[in-house]
Length: 190
Image (cartoon, rainbow, N blue to C red; front, side, top):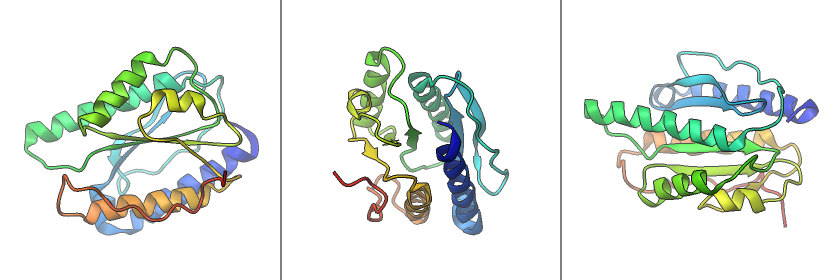
C-alpha cells in the first residue's frame, strides 16, 4: 500500500490510537501491536497498552508478505496469552485485525489451518479488511470469517468502528462472552 491510501491509513491509525488513549480504562486494558508485512515482516510496535507509546508512521517498503505477517501476529498473541495464563490474569479473546491491499503472497494452506484452528478453539478472532478492489478469494481461503471490503478510503470510519468495538470489550466484565460490535458503516456495498 502506498500513496494516498497509505496517507489515509496513517492518519486513521493515529486518530484510532488517540481515541483509545483518551479512554483511561481502555488505554490500560487494550494491548495493541502493529505488524507490517510490506517488503518482509516487521513488528513496528510490540504488544503494549496505548497509554505507553506512540504509533510510528507506516511506510511503503516492498512486496507484501501477508501470510508471514499473519503468522507473526499469531505468534505475538500466543506469547502474550501464555504470559497471562502463567500469571493467572483473565483476558478476552485476542483479535488479529489486518488491513491489506494485496492478496496472500504464497501458499495459504498452513496459515489457513492455523487461523481456523485458533478460531474454532476460541483462542483468537481474525478479521481482514480488503482495500481498493482487492479480490476477496485469497482472503477467504485463509480466514474463517468473511473478509470485508473497505469503501474507498474510509479508514477513519473503519478505525473509529474498531476503537468503539475494542472499548466495548475493555469494559466487559465477562471474559468469555461475545462482545457486541457496533454497526459497520465503512464496508463497500455489493
